[in-house]
Length: 418
Image (spheres, one colour):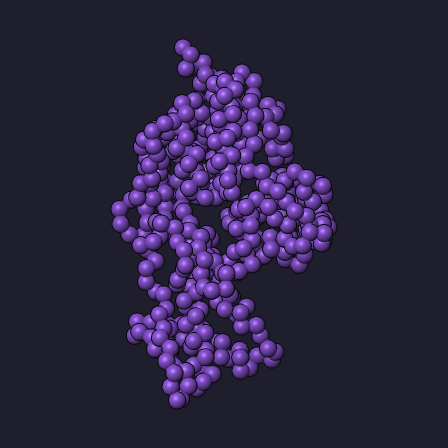
C-alpha cells in the first residue's frame, strides 16, 4: 500500500508539472489559473497521507494507465530504470499527443540551452538550423563567423543528416542540437548532405557568439538591415542600426528577413512600432473570447520600406511583414514566406527546471489577413537560380534578390521626390 501511495504522490507531482507554472506571459495570466495540484499533508499513525479535492482525484484517475504502466516496469523490467527519464518521457508524450509540432516539452537541460541561445553565447559548433515538417528535412540557414562549422566548411543550404548516432529530422532536431552542444575543446561527429554528396565531419566545440543584426549603407543612400532572428537584444540592435543609417542620410530602407525563423513576438512588435503611427500591429485570436489587438504608438520613422523574404521567413518575421505591408506601404521582394501564423508561449513547469512551449493563439495582420498555412506572396517575385543558396556577403548586389530590392527602393525614392 505504501508503494502504491508513493506512486500516486509521484503521479500527482507529474500532473502538477504538466499543468502549472511559476511565470506566464501576461496574455496567459488569465488562461492558466486552475489545474495546479493543491495538496494538504497530514501525519497519521498509519503513515503519510495526502488529501486532495475530488476534482483532482478524478483527474488522477484519468491518468491511472500511466500509473499502471509504471508499476509494471518497476515490478518486471529486467533492469533498474531511471524514474526521472520515465517522467520526462511521459511529459514529452503528453504534449506530443496534442498533435501540434510547435507544442512540446523541454527537459531541464534543453530549457536552459534555449535561454542560453537567447543570450547569444553558447558552446557548440555555430549553426542556425531550420526544420521543415513537410519535407522532414533540417537545413542549415546560417553558419556563424569564426565558428567550428565555418572552419570545417559547412555551408548554408547543407542538410543536417546525422549527429553522432542520431538521424536528424524535425522530431529529433532538439536531441541533435543537444549533442552538438557541450564542453569547449571536445569533439562531435556530424554528417551533412550537399546535393548527392555525404559529408562526414568531426568538429571541435567552441564558444559561439551570435550576431543577430547587421547593417550597411548601399549605393544611393539605401539602407540595409539584415535581421537573422528575433532573439536576445535584436530589437535594441535594430534601432541602433536604424538610427545610424538615418543619421547618415538614408533615403529608403531594405529589411532583410530571409531565412529568419522568427522568435520573440514582443521584438517584432517593437520593430514594427518604429515605422508606424498609432494603430493596430496585429490581432490574436485565443481559444475563447474576442480578438485581442496589439497597438503601435505615434512617432514613426517615415522612410520608404522594402522587405526581403523567402520560404524560411516565418512567425515573428511574418508579423513584422504583415504590419509594415498593411500600414507602412512596404513592398516585399523575394519568394513566398513560410506561413506560420500562430503564437507560442514558453514557460517553466514543475520544480526541476523543465519547460514547455504551447501554441496559444492565431494571429492576423492589421487588415485581418490570415497568415497561418498561407504566408505572404512577394509583390516582386525573385527566386534564386538552382544551386544558389545565397552565399553572399552583406550588401553584395551580386545577390539577385537584394539587387532587385535595391532597384525597388530606388523607385520608391524617386516616387517620393516627384
